[in-house]
Image (cartoon, rainbow, N blue to C red; front, side, top):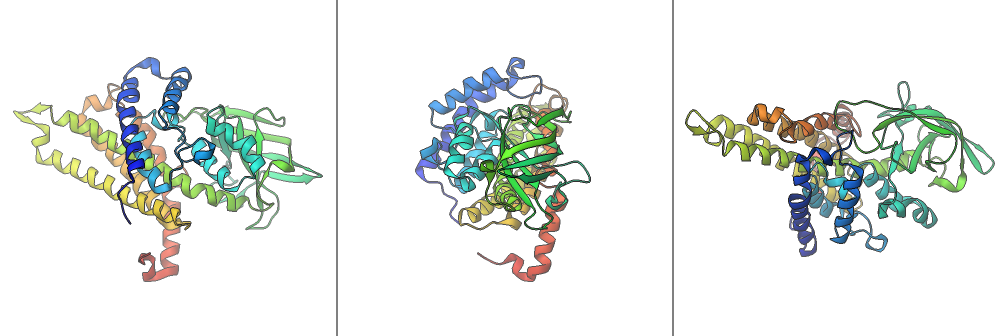
Length: 398
């Protein structure tokens, strides 16, 4: 692997860093910048998105011909890390979940007509989107084969009934990707569909209160009651729903890691600034060995996470699914995010625990990292299965 960036990508990375430092981080200390759910307010978001577009920093993951920047996964890793040094960064650059993963999978599998109708408005920033898969027990979570929401064919339509929960962004989304059960086949029993917020037959039951700050649109419970979806809004073939989720979730998990590394770095930035100026008992905190150990361990963990993330991104760029590489990055970086912000709060003391910095926001947000897109324990099971199957070749080169 070559870790150097092309001049074009390095220039974008540097401009993203400048935009974050000059335009976004200053907004974080102003209470007026936030909505009632602790994310950037919509009027401010629209203004900042306009600036990002003007500077050519919009939709990095999408093809140039569709208005994006055409970056590879490895190139995205360097830029996504920079953008999430601000808690507002990903959504401003149109690279936040769930839109990010939805755009990537639609660009890969949708028909040209579907791309024009369902994908392009998300790329343009005209609408937000949501991915509708997870169900409450005993339905599907990390195991999609347990899905209870059904789609039954009636002529040229599908009739959907069921219940979903923790659907990110649903309250603000206009375009939805729905995964439903269409047969009892364990591998080919799921199918993916597209629907619009104005389509009849579904409702948001509630926006689930959560521990941390929320994405726009929150995390919602959805009920489907005899919802009719035309077959032309089916994604891929009947029975390809599991395949679509696999295509979507690998890259989406990895872009989470890219963004979390940015938050990890920001946490240490805040901590190092504090300990280099704060004196105690006649000595700067940064001169104390115990503080140096804490900073060094967190910095090393971030670099390990970056290497795992970049390796998985490189493998995805070669056409590999990189399942175990993505799982390793997901587990390691989720832990690293928590370690980094926890270390920063400890070093900043009461200031870190207060709302005078964004550390407490990041800390509450960080706890979800070990749960979303597959709990860490599930990914460790994936790794264990690969180890038992491959033996010493688990660590093969190439």
